[in-house]
Image (cartoon, rainbow, N blue to C red; front, side):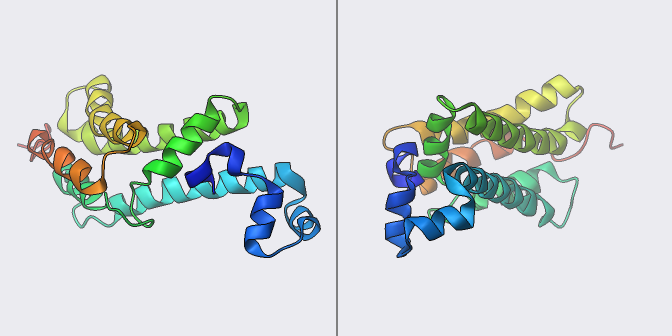
Length: 176
């Protein structure tokens, strides 16, 4: 409901009805609306970070930036299990503009994702600042694609990100 209706759709009465539960049992299970919001955001954060980390860990050659970024690009898919969930991402980012708790969660997610990308790039560039700029390029592309109305489709975004892959060095700068 968050992905389709935004923060205004995150209402206990509507969610309980959709799940066939009473509002009382829903409140009891989640310790009220704030408890539900806390658990929902924790789930979204875990989902966002674990999928990203798992994709990086799946690459057979850990220091191969091109392979890692290629794997992340492969996971830009239309399915809910892929890394690209533009409606949900847009809903949470919009919600974060008016709710400090949501903003804190979104900031942590962005920081973890950017740090992971930065660590992928770091062996291939001369400075931390260059690694950050290199990490920002695909990340901002994906975030921006999801914020467009309508969002850029997964296949088109994957094609655009693939255009960046030749920019990734094949060897680290410390390799002789």
